[in-house]
Image (cartoon, rainbow, N blue to C red; front, side, top):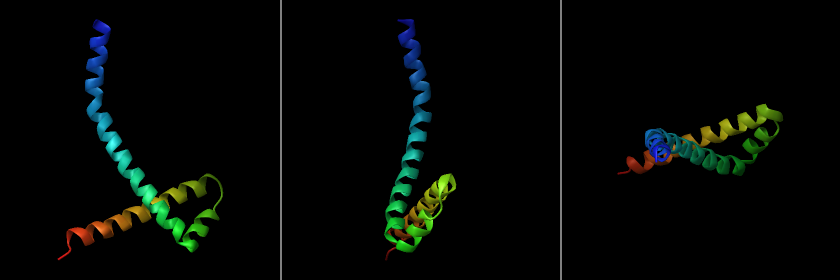
Length: 84
């Protein structure tokens, strides 16, 4: 019974941090997915990113997707919140 109780207490201690991490990771993933959809539809940007090979190309591609996702998300959020 002591092991079950210790496991339960451990889960309760870790749960808030786990939920905070999952919420941040999920938000970042949504920006990456949204930005990826948009960058794949802009031919020049898509081919510029694809032209870079290797790990650097992968990292730069993800950063471009994240940047586009955050920028478009900000514009849409501002348009929705500050609409007359």
